[in-house]
Length: 117
Length: 480
Image (cartoon, rainbow over all chains, first blue to last red; front, side, top):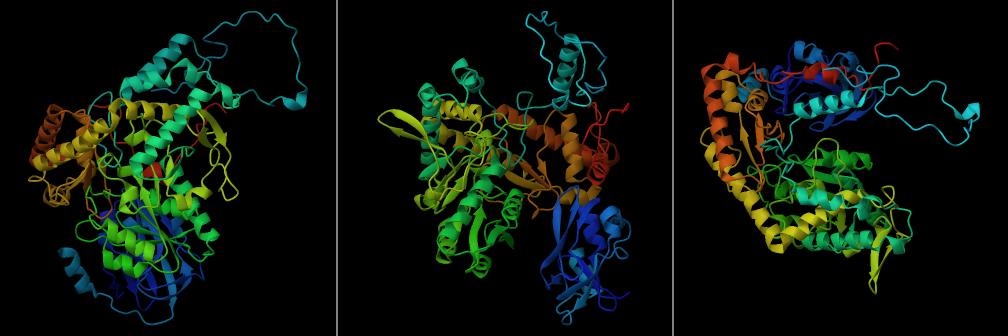
């Protein structure tokens, strides 16, 4: 799966339109205990928060890499938020129907460079 | 350790009632409970031992150093408790006739006036139960103000990314939309980001100053100007009032409304379940919306005056947490204007002393002079040997020091946030710094052993993850 990234550590798969948080993000957050997601049909806006993840350390907003509407929500995360820790690139959070192509995202390589700093 | 319920034995009790010397009255069945309430049945000795054992397992500011950042765990002089225990205060009832409550009303009136003077506000309500309730009340005032001025579209509250979590939470509770703005490199408000965020939909900016990294935002006048020019109001989160009280006033900085935590700044115990007290002060423009009743004075007679037509209504039963107000006034009166100012200065001095001793060893968030608290980071330690802020906090417990606040503010990775307060001596601060530096050496020498802390406590590391994922919030007896 080809993924692109936001500086705020979200990943986006342009083919499948799924959004999640990166391995680095889940590692930094620590054990995730709660995920708050939008509902199907809600609008999302590129660069704006669409949900929250709560770990034992604190609550962080999750930003959308793309504008559009929520097509599907991974409801498994409601009862099993630990899936994000276990497999962050399988544990997608929402699937969107984009209203415009995503812009200004980082490639895998660029993102790896960013977090290596 | 067993709970008091598990120690219960049917029929055992801690007192013997005299025989009933009046005729028994039988309540009609529909007024009775179907099942008797489950009270623990224990003898006096069980009761005393149970709570003595619990108190030994607890840790408070009376036990030792408690540098919990953003909480101002200062020592509370016992004189304040004595004042709050006076029978003239503890024996009164809020529904007594006002002419028999003149002393209590005078106390509330005086405290309100002192707090107005300290904050630079025109009017004070003492009703809110504690800090978050104060925030809620203040936002209600802001809403009422905008509605009254024909601006229902002002539905956004701006909050910096370094803010206390209660700020966006209070905004959400009031059905406001929260707009997050980034902080500049110094942890202060980014003026350009603020300018871009304000507009016709701005209700208010919520801001604590000094901010949560312990830095005084010198641009506060400009910030106030930007918010006011956009038609918004400026709200002061009083959590960090301690190092500025008696020195500068939120009212003079340009704030329109403030909340205070009497249980932090004005030395009444907090933690352990309260009660707290979260008075709200405001400028004259917001005064018509304050909750009633408010204590007023005329010719030496004090009365409880109901809120006006525009009042948001009462926010707490009766008049707020009265006994906390007594402690706060006792504190303010015993220190006096000079003492209050000195307390603020010593709070900042103590924090700077600790930061100066530690910052060569841990990266400090700011190299600037701090106010009452400072943030250092375990990020380097984590990279080098895998020891996190959490591990460090747990190790401090074994050394008899209450951990600092960790992982806050969110803008600093692996944050440790210390607030020593003014009530600690140089000896205590030196001892704490020595211990911290010793632990740092231990962490680097043997990280695996370090991760075992705490080992000296009755409870080691509770399973925080399961507690958060599957919380058990109600005690269920095994037998039912």
